[in-house]
Structures are given as C-alpha cells and as structure tokens.
Length: 404
Image (cartoon, rainbow, N blue to C red; front, side):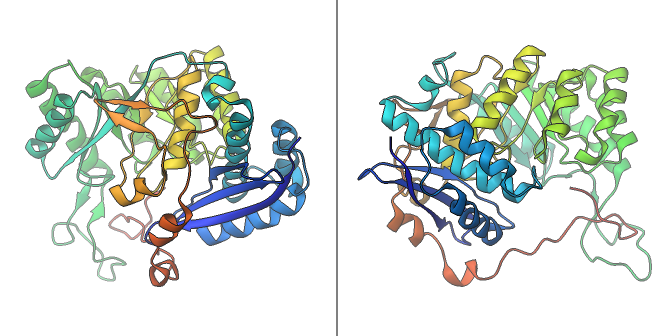
C-alpha cells in the first residue's frame, strides 16, 4: 500500500488566499490534491497543515477514516475553523488518491451517481430592482432554474448613507450603516417586484448573511412567505440558531443554514429537529469529504437537503469536491455556483464545467482535477500576499458591529 511521503501547500490567487494541499506518496507520480483555502487566515491554515503532517507522514493513504480521526483528535481541542480547513484539504487529497488507485472518479467510490448533472443556482445582484430584474432574466435565459437575488452587497437594501442616517456626534464610521427596519422594508418589496414582473416560473433565493437581529429574522421570514422562495440563506448567525424554532412556528419559508458552521453540535440539532431545509456547510470547513458525506446521510434520514457553500473566495478544488458529493448523494438539493477567471481555470486542469445551470464533473479517476503548480503560483502577487486582507465590518448607526 502507498504511504504518505510528503504533504505540501501551494498558495495561489492574487493575494495568496487559495491554499491547495498536495499529499505525495512513496509511489512515483501518485499524489492527491485538496482545498484548504481561507480568505482571512491563509498563513495560519498553512502552518496547521505543516503541523498536522508530522502525524501523517509514513501512514497508509488508504486508511482515510482512520487518518481523519487521528487528525481530528490530534490537537485535543477540535472542531475549530482552522483545524477543520487544514484537515479538509488533507482529506480531499486522500480521496483523490483513493480514486486514482481505484481507477474511478470519487463520486463512483461514494456509491455512484444519483443524477446526470448537478443543478446550480446563479448569483444575481443589481443596484436597484430594475437592474436586478434584468440580471435575473439573463440567468433564466442561460438555463438557470434557481437564482439568488440581492440588491447591492450582502445586507443591500438595509444600508443608509451617513448623510441620511442619524449618526452620533462621535460616529465610529463614515460608511453607510445598516438598519434592520430598512432591510425589512426593502427586501419584501424586491421580491414583490420580481414576482410581479417575472412570475413564479423561476425559483428564487436570498442571502441575509446573518445581518438581522433574531426577532427581525423571524419577521422577515414571515414577510417573504407569499413569494414562495426556494430558500432564505443564513437568516441567523450561528450564535442564535435556537431562533429557528420560532421561525418554524411562524411560517413555512424554507431555510438554508451552515456557511459558518464548523461543529456538528451546530448543524445536528437543526437537522434532527427539522428546523432547516438545506445544510449549507462548506466542504473544507466541514473537515472534508469524509465528514460531509456523513452530513449528507444525516440529512437524508431527516428529509433535509444539502446545498454545499461555495462563495467568491473559494477555489476550483473545493468546488470539485462538492460536485462529487452532489453527484453521489440522494439528499442533494442545489449547489452554489462559483465562476473563476480564465487564468485561474487554466491552472486547474480538469475543473468542473458549468453550462446552462448545471455543473458537470468528469470521469477522470480521483477528484478529476489537477494543479499546474507553476501557473497556480504565478497567479499570486507576493507583495499583495504579504498584506493579509483587513476586515472592516458593517456597523449600525451607533457603531455596533453587524455580524457575521
């Protein structure tokens, strides 16, 4: 059996925020890759991968479950975002190797396809309702059956410019501030406009991105009920998931949750008590394919669907891992899309293909995606990578921070 000889990390993208794990075996040419990308803590995750490799060098690559359990408990404290991401990247790489050894794609190792392709939803945003409507129509014409709708950025429709907002004399921000009531007024009007002008033939979603206070999240879910959304995403932050019971009691608007989840104790109650409709965990943050396939099975038993999280900060390797889970899971619901620049795709041959509202994997053994290290590294600007992104949170008028 091949053993793990080396584990290395390859940083890519402009600011070095993509972190690709490469597990190299003692058999010539046999290796696997995985995603350990973290937009805010790439350097920290890199160090975690290096530290975890000490426990994995010399181990049998085929013992994926045992290797996962070893790493998961190796730090004593577990279920943190950094450890999960490092473990997730290693785990994906081990599944990639397993598929190459078996001579088949990972989704066939996981039981075989449950569908011919993976439906994805598009991201439509506009500066106003009319602009948004045009963008939604473009997605419909391109074949998309599900479209996410936003006015401006996350929280768009709830921001008030400083000149119009009643800021204190010693205001902590000169940017637009978020106001729950403005959001509650704008978003239902947005969907009323879309349903009136486009109708109910297309499925629509919306991402709150945890901006609302819990009681206002309940109000929004009720207000959106007449527009029959496919789901509302992340209406609550992880700290307030108990409020999903209130939402369930009040309305039937479908809920998708999990983008910030890293601990099973966060998603398990929501699934087993049927308080959400879609689990939105990112595969790397969920600690890889090994853990996320268990989430998918749990969801199946309780009538919940998966909608693995992607996002603009993610990379083609994580997208491909999600695609394999989607293909092999009967609890799959919808997949978040992610588009990349041509130069980025060129550095990852075998990447997933998105056409007409569907994502397609390939039949190449393993994850089916590879990395051209020279091209991947060339995407990174060393000067930009040396200046980690600084987080500037949204704030309310009084200066308090809006989560996430």
